[in-house]
Amino acid sequence: MENKEIIQELDQVAPLLNTIAKKPVQTVPEGYFENFQVQIDPSLSTIQIQEAPVVQMNHKRKWFMVAAAAVVIGILVIGGFELINQPAVTANPGLVINMEQIAKMDINQSVQSLSSDAIDEYLKTANALAGPENSLHQYTVDAISETTVAEISDEELQLYLSE
Image (tube, rainbow, N blue to C red; front, side):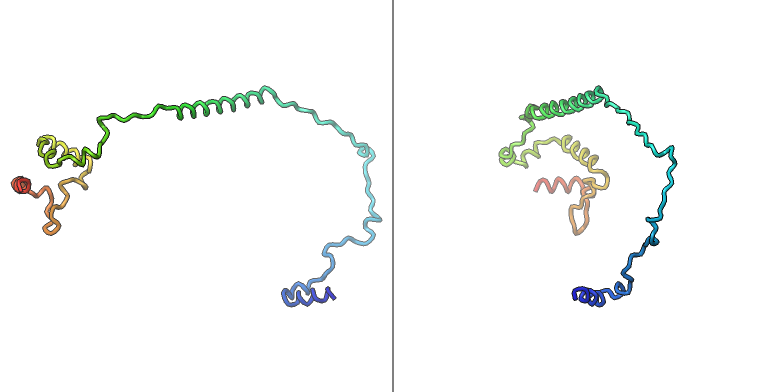
């Protein structure tokens, strides 16, 4: 009964599987093993077992590998301690920027106290660092007229600064 259910289910799911014969594909002729005769040469009938030579591992090489690993581990540990125990980097007090002092600073007075040579040197350095495409002379001052810094005369700048 159970077999019939399986066959019906196979007919529904995979009808091609039911058409395949259910006998072994590979067979041996009948009586093959009963009439099977093996002819072995009598000189080969005695099996001689030869023992394989025992090769001993080189103990010196093993110790060398262990010593090399210990040296590498030692270097890593010492390097780690040196990295951890480095003295703290102290900042130069002259280079520390105090934000409170900057907030109290009068920018107009500081800029007016600069010499023209210092301003010219700054502008030359800034232009050299920025490159020709980002030069300060390329900036537009007025978006409507598209006037650049290079087109402004000295008199106009003096007039602007005096206002």
